[in-house]
Image (cartoon, rainbow, N blue to C red):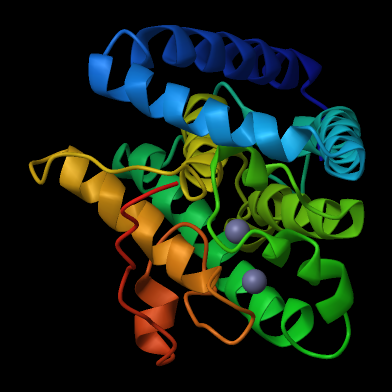
Length: 253
Ligand SMILES: [Zn+2]
Ligand SMILES: [Zn+2]
């Protein structure tokens, strides 16, 4: 194994820059700026409660710490500018096919979504950590800030499942992942996990109709703790394992 700190540092800088740029550009679109205002108004009333505010603060700190520890200790072994052997530092690895640069993005996301689906369904909704997960489920009609209203134990597990999917794929294939592809995967993971909770009511035309569909699917999971839609990025596993529920329509936030 080789510790590629330059790749990890570039990954961190690109993630940071891409997130800033995306947020700047996204809210130039009037429909999204309006959506943000509606969510902010409701979020403010939730954040008025000090217990809620504290929980969000702890979640953010724990999330940042888990990410940074992973970026320093594990990530440099699994990513690189060019592919190299994951297990054997001495052996030069073949460059590999170009399509793998693109395909590794959905592969990492689908590996994560599979692990998250079963963790969410059997541990967070099972006996083991149901009480921990109940904090997040206090949100019956989620808005933006509810994506951050998560118990630190759940935040740690969820993040490690995603971050851990990178070394898993690198270990199984025996080749490190491309750092740019992993920036895209991590960006999609972060944005989709936040978007899930946002209150939206858009005009029924593409791409807005898709966004309403995505948020409606997760809103259905939040109705109570007995609803399906356990996966967080796609509906694939819920459809596969028979726990998919139709999205709910929310007239108000
Ligand atoms: Zn749940
Ligand atoms: Zn949720």
